[in-house]
Amino acid sequence: MDACHGGFQASLFSFACLRLARLIGTIALWAVVAVSLTTPSVAATDAITVSGKVIAVRPGVFLLYPGSSCGYKDVYFSGNTFFLRNGQSLRSGIYARVTGSGSCFTNVTASVVILSGTPPGAPTDHVFTAGLLGFRNGAPPWSKYAPYMSLGEAYPQNDRGLIAAGISTLQYTNPNRQMVGQPLYTSDESTFAHTCSGSRIVGTSNKKLYLMNPASSNLWSMWKDYIAGLRAAAPMDAILSDDSDDVYGTTGMPCGYNITSWLNATIAEDAHAGAPIIYNGLGLLGPGYSISPSIGLNATAIGGMMEGCYAGFGTYKPGGPIWATIENTELAMSAQQKLFICATSNYTDGSSAIDARRYAYASFMLTYDLNSSILWEGFSTPSDVKLFPESGLVALDPVEPTPTNVSALLTPTSVYGREYLACYIRGTYVGRCASVVNSSFWTTYRFPYTRYHHTLVFAGDGIFDGGRIYANGPPPPTILPPLESAIVFP
Image (tube, rainbow, N blue to C red):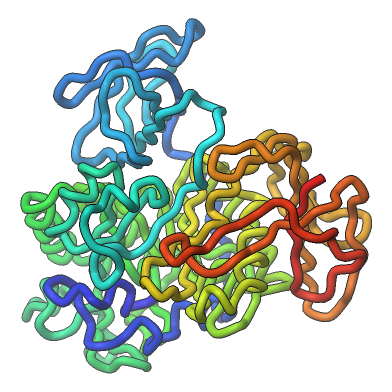
C-alpha cells in the first residue's frame, strides 16, 4: 500500500517522494474496510513440500534426495521459480526445501526453493530477513551482508552481484498505481480504472498517481513485457507488486466495483506476469480488523507483504484485535505455504526504539515459521543498513504446537506466550527460551512463567552499527504493562 516503497529507484517505478510522505500503507493497517464481504480462505495451491540434499544439478532441473520414503526426485525449475538463497548457490551437496506441484511418487515442479547449507531442522544463523540494499543502504562487496540478509530489494544493476553473494533479489513494481512518465502509463484508457462518469481515479494523498484497472488484459501484457525486460537485463528472483488488490485512499470508486471481481482480476494479473510475484496488500485489513481479503492473492502469488507488522508509524504499537490479526495472518500464510514478509513501519532510530524492536520481535516469534516468515525491519540506523541483531535469535522445537489461531497461545495470566526447547543466537545454543507479549492497550497482567530468570538484552543499533543481543539480561518482570513484551531464558 505504500507507493513510495522503494522510492529511491529513480530509473524504475520511482516516485518523487520519500517513504514517509505517504502513510496510507501504515494508516490502512488500522482501518476497517467499509464493505460487507467474507475474507477469502485460500487453500494451498501447491501439492507437496519436500526437503533433502541436492545430489546433482543440470539446467532447469536438480536431483533431490528427501529420504527413503520418497526416494530420489527430479525437481524442475524455471523463471517462475523463486529461490531463497540464504548465502548459497544451487549446487550438489547443499540442502533444499522445495514447495511445488507433484507428489512423493512423481517429480516436482518447484514454485519456491529454499537453499541451506545445513540439513532440515538444523539451527540457522538468523531468521529470514529482507530489506533495501544498494541504494544508499550498503555498498559492495555484497558478500559482507550475505550472512545476515536473505532477500534484498535493490537496483537491477546490483542484482547480479547480490545473487552471486547468495542474497535473493526482489524488484519493486506497481502495476496498480501509475503516474506520468512511468513504464505502464500510456494513452490506453483500458488500462486505467474509471468512475461511472468516465473519469480516471487518482489518489487522495498523491493526485498524480492513477488507479489502474487489474482486469485490463492490455495492462497485463504491458506489465509482463516490462518484467521480462528487467529480467533480461538482470537475474532478479521475485517481483514485488505494490498496492495489490487495493482501492484504498482514492478520490472515487471504479464503476461497478465488486470486491470479489477486483480480487479475481488481480489474481489473473499476477498469474499473467510470468515471474514469481510477492504482493503488498496484507496490511489493508478486512471488516472488524479481520485478515485482509488480499490473502486471496495467494492463489497465484508466492507470498505477500504486510506493512505496519507489529510496529506502526512513529512509536505506535499495534495491540488488541489488530495485533491478533497480524499474528493470525502470519499463521495463515504459513499454513498456505506462502512467504510472509513482516515489514515494520516504525522508522525511528533503532538504538532509541529498543522497546518497539523487542515488542515486534517477541510478537514475530510467537507464530513465526522458520520456512516462510521473513522479517523486514524499518528502524533507522547510522549506516542505513536496516538489519538488526535480534534476527539472529532462532527458536526451535516449540513446546506448544503451531496453532491455527493465536488465541491458543493465551496463557492463564491473560498474556500471550510460547516456549521453545532449543534456542540459538547466531548459531550458538543458549538453551530454552520463551516469547511473551501483553497485547492489551489498557491492562497490566502477570508474567506467566517461573522457570525463566534472564531476559534478552538489546545493545546498540543495527548489526553494521555495532548492535548486539545477549541472553543474560536481568530477571523478567513480575508484571507486564500494556503493550509490553519479554524474551526470556532460564
